[in-house]
Amino acid sequence: MKRWFRGSRDVLVMVSAGLAALALILAALASALLCLVGIGLPLLDLTFKALRRRANRRRRRLDDAPAPYPVLPDSIVGRLRAQVCDVAIWRDLTWALASFVLLLPGGLIIVYLWMSAIAGLAAPLLLVFRPDGATLSLNGQLVTGPATAGMVVLQALSAGVLAFLLQILLLSAERLLAGYLLRPTRRAVLAGRLAELNENRADALDSWEAKLRRIERDLHDGAQAQLTALTMNLGMAEQLAGEDEPVRRLVADARASASTALEGLRDIVRGIHPPVLAERGLSGGLEELALAAAVPVQLSTDVPRSLPAPLESALYFTAAELITNATRHSGCDQIDVTVATRDGMIRMTVRDNGAGDMVPRAGGGIEGLRRRLSALDGRLRVDSPTGGPTVITAEVPCVS
Amino acid sequence: MRVVIAEDSALLRDGLVRLLSAYDFTVVAAVESGPELSVALHEHVPDVAVVDVRLPPTHTDEGLRAVTEARRAIPGLPVMVLSQYVAQLFARELLSDGAGAVGYLLKDRVGDVVDFVDSVRQVAAGGTVMDPQVIAKLLARPSHARPLTTLTPREREVLSLMAQGRSNISIADRMVVTERAINKHINSIFAKLGLTHSETEHRRVQAVLTYLGGDDV
Image (tube, rainbow over all chains, first blue to last red; front, side, top):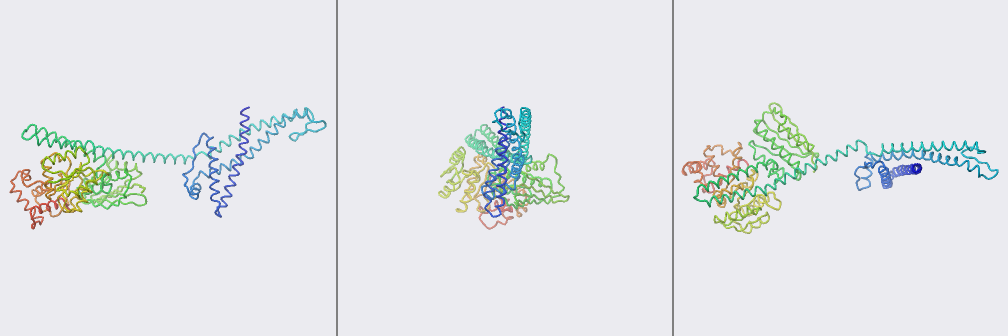
C-alpha cells in the first residue's frame, strides 16, 4: 500500500518534472534567441543555474553522483562560455528534453489509467446507488446490470495492473536515462582523477623539496655550527696546552676529527641541496657550477626570477650532472650552457665540443635525470653524433 | 686592532669574540644580522670585519651583500668572510673590485687559531687570503690566466701559498727551503707577471689577485 502511494506520488512528481523540463527547455531556447539581441545573456545564465540546480537535485537521489560542471568564473559571459564549451550543461539539457518527452506523456497516460481504474472499481456501488431512471456510463461502457458492472470492474482491474506496470517501467526508464546523462562521463571522471593526481604529485614534490631545504637549514644552524664551535674551542685549547706535547697532539687530533666530520656534512649538504642554490637561486647555482668546472663553461642564461623550488633543484642537478659528464667523458674543451623560457617551457641546453657518440647507460646518470625531469612533466633529449658536438636539452613546463 | 664581528649563531659569535680578544683585537661590535652589520661597518669603520656569509633576516647571502655594499662606500674596507662552505662565485665577487683586503675561509679554519689570527691580520693589512679549497678549484681550471702559464711549477706553488695568506717564512717552512730561495721565487713571479714598478706589499696583492682572478677579474 505504502509502495503504491509512493509510486503514485512518483508519477505526479514525474509529470511535474516533465513540465519543469519543458519550461527549462523553452526558457533556454527563448534566452538563446534573445542573446541575439543581447538581453538574453542574464536570462540564459539564470536558466542554466536553474537547470544545474534541478540536475544536481536529481543527482543527489542518484546515489549522490558528483556534479560534473567545470569551474565557473564570476562574469556572466565567462560563466556562459565555460558552460557552453563544456559537455556537462549539454548533457543536462538533453536530460531535460528526454525527461520531458518521456515523463509528461507517460505520466499522463498512467494518471489516466489510474483514474479509469478507480472509476471502474466504483461501478457496482454506483449501480446500486444511482438515482432512478438514470443511465450509468463508465469508461465508455453503459452499465445496465451486474453483468456489465462486472465487466467494467474487470477492465478497471486490468487498467490498474497496466498502470502499475507502466509506472515501474517509466520509473526505471527515467532512472536509466538520468544515470546515463547526469553522471559524469568516464572521460570527465578520468580527467578529474588526472587533475587530482597531478596536484598530489606537485604537492609531494613541493613538500619533498621544502623538507630538503629545511634539512639544509637545520644542519647549517645546528650540527655544522656546533662542530665549528667545537673546532674553535679545540683550537684555543691547543694553544693553551702550550709545551705539553701529548696533550697538544691529542687536542689537535680531536680538532682534525671535527674538521673531517664537517667536511662530511658539507658533502651531504651539497648532495641534497647545494647552499649556493639556497642563497642565490638557479642563476647563482649555475654560475657556481660554471666557475667550479674543470673545463671552461660559457653561460647564457635567462632564468625567470621565481621558479618553483623543485624545478630549480631539478635543473641545477641536471646541469651539474651534464657538465660533469661532458668534462669526464667527452674530451671537450668548451661547454655552453643556455637557459631560456619560451611558450611556458623552460629549456636548458648543455652543449660540448667533445667527441660525441655518447650513449646513455641503463641505470646511469642520464636515466636518473630523465626520471627526475619526468616527475615535472619534463623531458631530456640527447643528440650526440659521432664526432660531436653533444647537445643535451632538458625541457620542463613552467608556469610563471 | 678594531674588529666588527657578524655571526648569527650565538655560540660561534661568542667563540670568535673570545678568540680575537685573546689575540689583542678590540671587538667594537658583534652583531647577528645583515642590517645590523651594515650599520656597524659604517659607524665603526673597523680595521677588519669578520663576517659570516649567511645571516638573518633572509638567511641567504645577507652578510656577503652587506660587506660588498660597505666596500663600495668605503673602498678597501678589510673583510674576512667566513662560511660553512666556499663558493667560487663568492670568491670572485669578493675579489672583483680589485681592492684586496679580503679573506674568504671555511669556518672550521678558525680552529687553526694561529693561522686564522694571522690571516685576519693579513687581511687587515690589505692582503688577500683565500681558502685552499677555492685555490684548488681554481688550479683545476686549465684556461685560467694566461700570464700564469709562464710560471714554473715551483713558482706556482709559492703563489698558491701566498694566496692562502702565508708569509714568506711560513711558505719557506712549508716548502722546506730557505726564506732567501722564496724571495727569489717571488721576485721572479713579480717579473713574469709584469709587476715591477710598485712597492712590495702592493705587488704581492696584485700577484695574488692575478693568480686568483683567472680570466674572470
